[in-house]
Length: 268
Image (cartoon, rainbow, N blue to C red; front, side, top):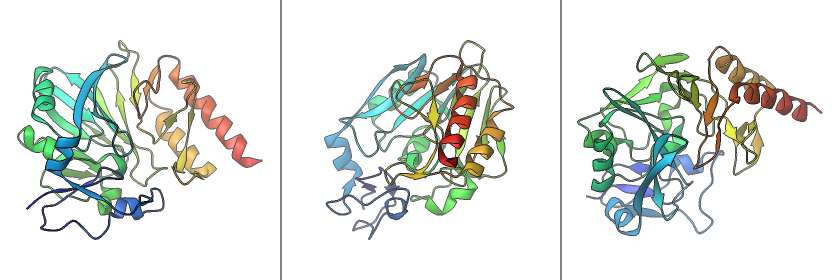
């Protein structure tokens, strides 16, 4: 029986003879059901229509789908001596892309910021011998394809290595997570934020939303909690959710300024 992928958000669902009735990720108020109605692709159909491409994005290798699919996900590969940590995920795993990751040292873990980026985490895990998939347990209700490799971590932080720690900020989702890479940016430190903290188009600031497509802002308390989680971390660079949406330097000052600007804007 086929595996099914939601055409709107890229979430993968278990094997079944017929597609699911609905996608809970899209029916959540932070996302939306496609205007033409809920649509599904089998994993095989997805692989026929799309391919995976890869390139460096400000010194980190990344993978995305071509042509663009779902919300335009791209995965980043944080390289360490014993393998890569994949940050966020794409809805497809192809033999060519798997071989590319092997050429970088393989995949030792997958970590995801929030449910909009779960994608094909199970396929990527299986391709690398059951690599653990770290998703915050506060969002476990939106796991669309349960798998034994999923680690629903809890609390406010979870260390993956000496240089990599996951930090729960909340905000966009209760389990909204960022990745702090101490060795990133030539040792100055880097944050990988997905759109839990969204790098703006000026690439000098960030913003914060409960729902981006439905224009629901976060309240001031939620944004203060995000800053409280981030403020103790040392970093000079931020990698955002899409190609090129990064803050190359002075990122911590930009983050603090953006928090203050956001709170002032919504406070009137």
